[in-house]
Length: 243
Length: 243
Image (cartoon, rainbow over all chains, first blue to last red; front, side, top):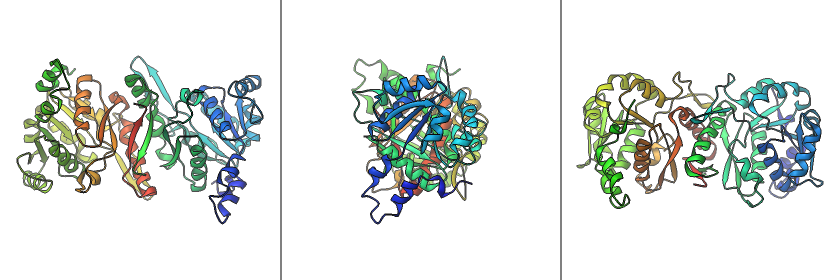
């Protein structure tokens, strides 16, 4: 079972300072974030916003050249680079799984080694589309995040960023995204860290959303947001009230 | 398949007026609302708020005397009465299913007749609890609402009011509830009507949330809200952004 060692050292240090508020942002942005399947809309969108927040972001792909191109396209510069998924998984401190659901299990299974001892943030939504719109797919493990946890016994899997519209993340006109990011997981230090990362994106707020076993409905809720977007011509997100 | 006749006549009339804004509230509150399993917290809470909005509300129970007691307890007066589930199902224009999940299928199956031709609003959340908190139960039909639709072929089933805290609804100190009510269903006129009913509760806003096949994750999300309430000592709800 993954323990405290899965939380990056600099975050542990932060938690031990007398005044944890002082160096929050500085410490956090020192974390290098890898994005697996990062050439897709969601991966590029998250990569772009996290680089804007000050992180070094490594975009991963099966095709290293395509990954470098995607990194350039979303801003380039010293904070953004691209490479093969395997290399990015090895080089990053925290890794976001943003591949399509179809390739989710296979890719993670191949990266068990380099992802060991790391926090893996799963933002994959297993949803299908037909003539009636989007619908949730059945996942034998209960959710994409639980599938990741089953495949990566040496990593700490956290579910997050399911509802953030890629279009909004990639839109240069949007300075602030008006929504909460539900963060789910079974390890407090890991969910705290991911909540802090989510809150670095202007307008977003990381909110603890429950244990990993309750991640399936959060992933599936994306199908409802697709329906809402169609009905209201919007890029809907959610806010949690009374917190 | 249920058709337009499932929408109460007065709502149809409203939709045909030249200015649909004019008589919205007046027309709507003429609808008598029945609450099956209405002596539970959720049923009493919704009954109370809808009577406050001006509806005649009939609380249903297996025990008619207990139902009358519950109706008195949440305000009494000319707008609130109680009776047997079967009688309430027959007397109401629109019926809310608010029984515990354990009795959901059995009770609805017994009321197929009196619920025929009516809109049935299902607010039941199939969730379980253990030492780790709340979790979503597997429902063979996909959701409580889909189970209701399968059992009630002559009714129009709409899912709504899943996330509204009974404690908040019953709290006399709370004038306005700060959250959206996701409304799910396959019939536009019926979801429109239920959205309008939800929006009668001060602070609440009815929002279309998708087709019935996407109701499972909305019901299950209640488990996440339970986790959020524990973590943040709150009565959390959700708001949909950008609409």
